[in-house]
View 1 (tube, rainbow, N blue to C red):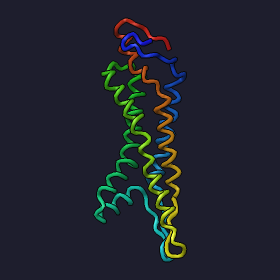
View 2 (cartoon, helix red, strand yellow):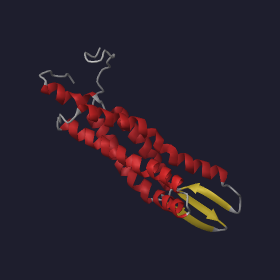
View 3 (cartoon, rainbow, N blue to C red):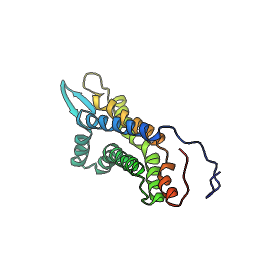
Length: 183
């Protein structure tokens, strides 16, 4: 039981830092093709057009659908990047035994857990578009290679957040108070 709040504690996650680093690095590698390769390939009247996530955001902005552009930008570009930045920051601060505001570090960690699944919005949009716009010979939409990489980024960052042990954030603060924490 936690001496501070009385909550039941669970055992530590073994190799949390190494596993989380491996997952974060894998997600960073997948993030690049997810944003560079086409997310959709539209064929209309024999003409093929490929769109990346960013070109889709720009298209919706120019067509006047800025709310859709904003949702896609936030869910598909900003949130995954923010999760990677936060997880990298937490990993570095834990490894350096930083005493930087553990409550805020914990809040950042909770943010990565809560926000993570919302990045799947882009994959759902592609899936719905592919299902709805199958007008035989007139037009078709197929998911592009970026869809696989983007899905991988989302899933890998979810696993990375799950593999990180947030108690590591508090270890340096506890050591500063003379209490050693067992790993």
